[in-house]
Length: 341
Ligand code: 3EB
Image (tube, rainbow, N blue to C red):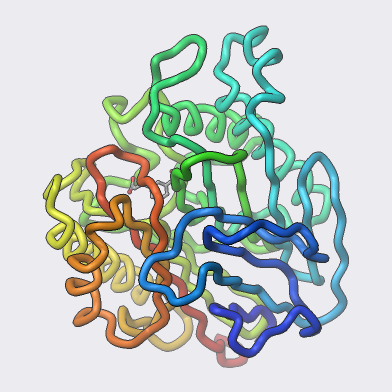
């Protein structure tokens, strides 16, 4: 297997060779001693005995790394993982001049740096993106009175279009999550080959959301199949209790959880129509569950466990990009690919 995901780091130590990068989730003290790109997600873990959890991507072969413009990255010959971290305050002056909010300009700048890097490195196709920003549901910012998630969406889409990339159809899998504070943090996996996008027949594609959800639609697919050598990985984007384009079951965490899992099951079915390895299955994936209110944890776990069984799940207390969404779930699985398939 050329790209391996290790969650909860059971069989990985910092001395393990081939660490491409990863994420550190949890509320414990931050350290910055990593020698690879690592996304810090400073949100409380729920249902976890540990204060922090580290996840890693392991990659085969020779690794090469670099650091430019607040972006740290590492790659082998076919896949690049990077993390860019920007402080919005550094953009307030320039944003005023351009008539944008600082978050909009920071988001556009982050994506512009990502695209410049992956184009330069010859791995220009974004596979999966993890977006984190402070106060995602707040309406702040100089001009607009626009919710911060919507400001982020403008900056993201502008960067896609400026780099000649599609903002519909062939777009990467993603999540966009709110934290209490901290910088804009974006991690990404990119490769030479375009992902196969997967949409959800139960939902309007996010890139076609109507303007009631903001002046620019979000730029992500519901899922993506990607192909490191000898492998097929399914990424399921952050998924919530949305049917069509509307939130359903506001204020009911259990029903939101079950609806979310209906959506994930639909994305898995759709992926299985397109996949080249063996079929994927809901109880056979790694899950990350974002829970808006810690008091909903038990209700959400009780709804989830019968559907997914004993697979790895990390619960994180964080905000979701619509104020009426109480949870969001993302998932990932990897299958070996037979030669020639
Ligand atoms: C949704 O379905 C929920 O803006 O990148 C999920 C996954 C959501 C990714 C993003 C947003 C994003 O609209 C929110």
